[in-house]
Length: 216
Length: 216
DNA sequence: TAAAAAACAAACCAATAGGTAGGTTTTATA
DNA sequence: TATAAAACCTACCTATTGGTTTGTTTTTTA
Image (cartoon, rainbow over all chains, first blue to last red; front, side, top):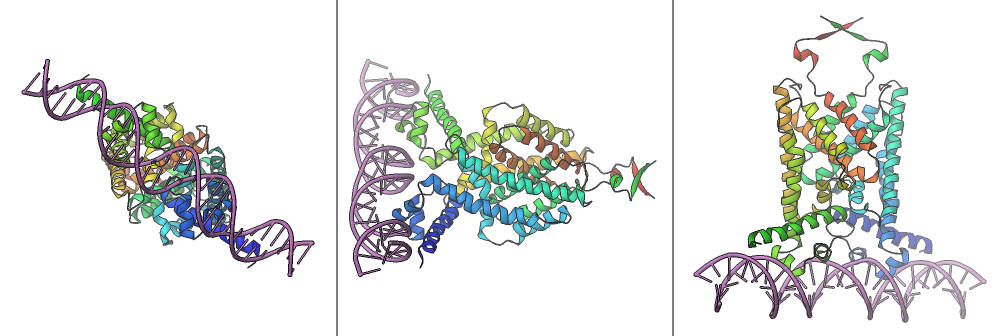
């Protein structure tokens, strides 16, 4: 096996196992010994690839968390169409259809934020986690603007607060899902999420087709 | 000083400092040595009051987290009136007016859930944290039912999903606030929260006073 | 094919972790 | 006021922590 491939393979196996364990049990709860044992490597290998534990988790954030948010929550909404349906489909996919084990582990993004965002030690990690959040927010804002342009959404909505509210509620429900075994909380969430999203729809006074009028 | 008071005082100082540090840095990141040093006690005192670290954090959950949720988010909504205004006032109090340091530390409840709810080791802690969440949810459901009875809210709303949605979004925004220094995210949240709560208002067809009719 | 660099393994290290044992001081009881 | 119990301190223990050093194997290069 060529050198470059071998290096990338071992490095990736460490990152994958580290991500899995740290997301499940937490950064301070997982030792390097634990990780290398489960992967079948030694300290020598680990510290050849990573300077220290801090740089290790930094790599996990960049190479797994950031990419997961992109592939799971940013790319799927980078398209045209009714934002209400696009978001609803996304939630159905990620919260209902997905049968993966990860469902009961909450949101990796929130998990890492809670454990790794206390200054001044983790200031750089905090910056990177915030950057991921910001990219997600921008993607949502763009989705909303397209929705306005294409006539699906009310043109008077404040896109940034709306985008933030979507992220807040979604990260919240994924985190609190850890307390419940059943998926009822996800179904309930989607139900209310749709109620909220309906407040963004284009109003009847705006679309110029139908008009409502108060009658006695 | 009487024996009983002395005991309770020491015990409380340990719990208070433990709560402060663990909420800030995390359960596994804070050692017992760190806690006893900051309160000026020794191992002997600590292990006289608590069997081990696990029972210690269990006491913190019961005697600080549970009580804080009660006094800050349950008791304030245990009253009559328009749920929309009651909730809005509460959020203003806790998110905007409150100048305490705790603002940048996220939600203690979520912090403890993320760090202490992975089975099978912490199963009992998970139960207790879920119990706190359930009590909060029940209080919200009761608030909503009163709102229906008193004519403020639509009688067709699903109270449990609504209560869950409120908790989800609130815990979410408090957690993600850790990434931002300014309070804009709180202002934006309250703005959108009100939009959502408006969907719960009594509909015009129900109140029997005003009626809207489609006209050409 | 030999040297050099890369990719690991093995053994080790100081510091810290949670926890224990036994003694000392403080308070309550008789 | 003597005794007992409660409240706390000191010193210590073992296991584990993140990290280092040195040696060995593998791959590349000249």
